[in-house]
Amino acid sequence: MEPVAVVGVGMTDIRKERRTDSFADMIFEAVQKALGDAGMTIDEVDNVITVSNDFFDGRTISSMAIQDACGSYNKNITTVEGDGTFGALFGVMRVLSGSYGTTLVCAHQKGSESESRLITNAMFDPIYERSLGIEAITSSALQARAYMNRYPVSEEQCAMVSVKNHGNAFKNPIAQLPLALTVDDVMASPYISDPIKLLDCCPLSDGASAVIIANVDRAKKITKKPVWVKGLGFCCDAYHLGDRDLSEVASLSQAAKAAYAMAGISDPAKEVDLVELYDAFSYMEPMWLEGLGFCERGEGGELTASGKTAMDGELPVNASGGCLSGNPVMVAGLNRIIECVLQLRGEAGEHQAGKVKTALAHGTNGPCGQSHCVWILGGDK
Amino acid sequence: MGDWRDDQELMVMEGRIKVPYDWAAGTVGSRYLRSLRDDKKFLGTKCPRCNIVYHIPRRNCPDCMEECSEWVELANTGTLVTYTTVRMQHPTLSPLPLPYGYGIIKLEGADTGFLHLLHEFEDSQLLEGATVEAVFREEREARILDVKYFRPLGGVK
Image 1 (cartoon, rainbow over the protein chains, first blue to last red):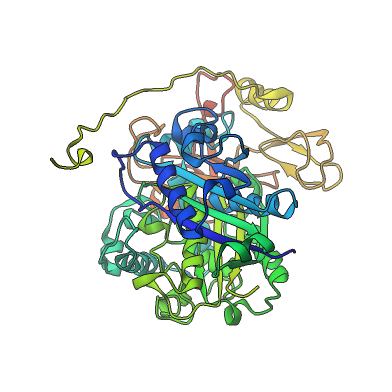
Image 2 (image 1 turned 30 degrees about the vertical axis):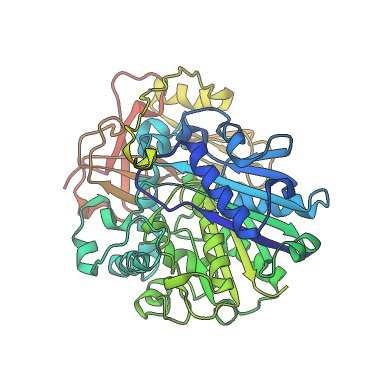
């Protein structure tokens, strides 16, 4: 792949509710921050990708309604309805097409303005599934149960993920929900849908983010601190939950293998310094770590329990606090990429996890991690 | 004078989107739903190349894209692949009173699982591989909820 770099990043802080901001206000803040970070003006942006979800926004073609705030007037604009990692993936492709030197990718989300469980219910099939009342939490509970039945991963080990990530959030000024928890606190929180308890779940969140992606010539002119896209992989599994073995991670493994092959990584546990992954529910962190090849199947819980994934461990995972500490859907994956960029630049502030040379960002789309997108990012080209 | 941003009364527009839809089940889906309504029977479709029986029935095999031309009658009993007990009632989503659950159920004769409700169970009866049976409604309308729910075979022990 031709070298492509992330040259600018911007995030609003993540809040439970942003009554001070409209969707456009949030996007304006994120885009201004990304342009400021890159030292660019909007005139230097060759094309724009906007990422949003119509059902969450309560308007059709929601990605076309924030044009005044992302500076896309008279520019080529395309839209992605999916996690931010996929929006940014498309941004890389636009640059690789050779037609654009730079792409601005922005995403926005307000979990506070609607009924999230009604909206996630609507991702299921209207003929066969929706009337059963299934939604994000209950479907994830089916996956968590299948995973824990198949592999020796316990509810306590998943609780440790929640304790760790909410603890990390104290050091990240943009995180929504830093919490000083014990495993007992998580275990004593009420069950919503077995085995998922209240403190295993991410909160509802408002926020927006933006990244600017550039080809090698433009990147060198724009910034002295480009972060290079070393590898990309993506893969999708079946839509109907009954068609999949929910305890398995085949599509993630495939996405990870493609990303590692592109980045020339043969042993991710040794060669990746930091991971930011999509942990909307605590069980997802060990499960995705297994799929990403950082340990054998069933060893993900032990990886957390051993302390290796702590901020000062061998492989810090979600040093930012992760989605458990703030999950603006759609924006979430873009934030995973941005957090990796900050870590690689050594600019993550209090949650800087030592010297990071290679980082992995991960996002998912669809129920129970139907589709995965894996990014390998590095400071060297 | 202070910053005007600090003393705003913040306005919020309340709304509700209610749009009617008619979702077509298609010829395959219609035959399946009619069979639930008229015969209280589950049907699957079989891929002639992979020999996989899909339930819910699919027009084409998702693996090889062959047309699934053969219909297969399935049992009203099957095994639990995975399950969850719902502990918090949702005012509009919950179709049953607590405690109810969801299961991925592989019906006898099918190679894939499907999602449905679980009810009339003790938690100890929800196990991977447990046999469950369909409970049909008296009044059926060719809907997936013509099956009220699944319960452990023989009910609560």
